[in-house]
Length: 287
Image 1 (tube, helix red, strand yellow):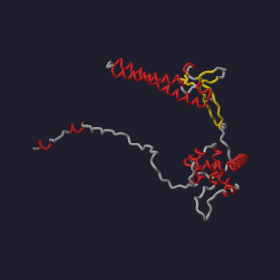
Image 2: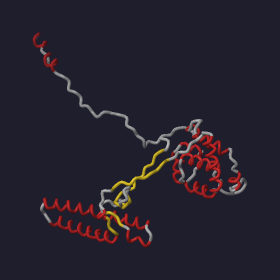
Image 3: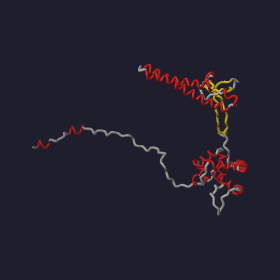
Image 4: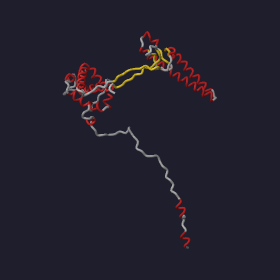
């Protein structure tokens, strides 16, 4: 009776030697960047720019100018119907700040008014588009030219602003195309037809031939012919582009390379004419 009570279901040795099974490790959990999530931030435009920002300086300067000429041209007046016009001070400030910033395009300026804090601050919540900016620039061209020149010069003289200057130069780089690869438009059109016919013939051979090795060879030939077709088609496009830049009498002389369609025959530093590219370099004069 005593012996039966001492017996257990699992002996002590088995309990001591048994090890717990390791739990399977899952993928690590991390917080990933999500830049497409919309955020609502309570902020005002005035807090987006520091107090000493150049946009504030331009705004204060323009407000000190005599803008009565522009205000007199506005047809919408108090007590009468008509859509309210955009304050000329806003448009004048935008163009002045754009001039200082090296921006001369109305479309580029309109994009900055949506994305750049300084331009958004000048707009002050007023919506402007490139049509409005362009019309204002053209309609008041004489006034703006004189005011912008005088104002920017005055600000530069006082050391308050500086103009971004960019120096540009070009260098001619020898192309890998040979002079013999240049063809006129009629020749390129014939090459295009031949390449198309060759591709169709190779496709038919691939479909009819059951041999795998020979089929792979013909596939490679078809791929080469297709690439040739693409090069000739690209060369034709560049021939048409060259024709638009030539005189009517010289249009038939326009040629393009089937090897490097973008290459042009240029005069090199040694005085010879060879296929080349005109590389453009631009750099900030201050840096």
